[in-house]
Length: 194
Image (cartoon, rainbow, N blue to C red; front, side, top):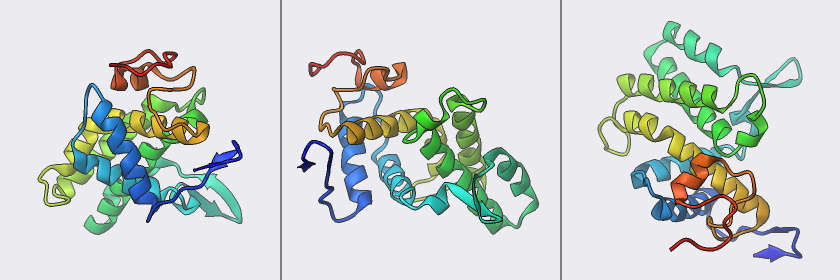
């Protein structure tokens, strides 16, 4: 629902179901759809990002970005359970940063490609430790393979939510070529593709 043109109220049972519906709609229109289980998992990741503790660490009373590359390297020194938690945290955080919050990393030294590769590596390592999720063998390998598409879909969700649009065909100017490719449209095209 729109709220005086300034925003909208989300009427949904949960953020996860709200994000799942948006991602599923985008995936259905995509030229390169991903398995629905990866959409479900990604909606869980988006729900988690509603809490800043999943994206930032707090040290000495200050908010700091998590240093994901360092965490990934140090994970091999931990117990098997600690490694799984770290790989999942790094993969999920990289997915959010390169997807929903991709604008915040554009133009930075460690840009979107860095987060793509880091997330893919984390999910591949997690797959070696815990290959099944949702009773799907090699689930995290699938997440690694679909990583860039999922991140692009999350970026589209961000654009839709920011502009209060219902249609993923109305992308903002400056949409990435990857976002346009996923939907098979030109980013400045405001007409629904057939």
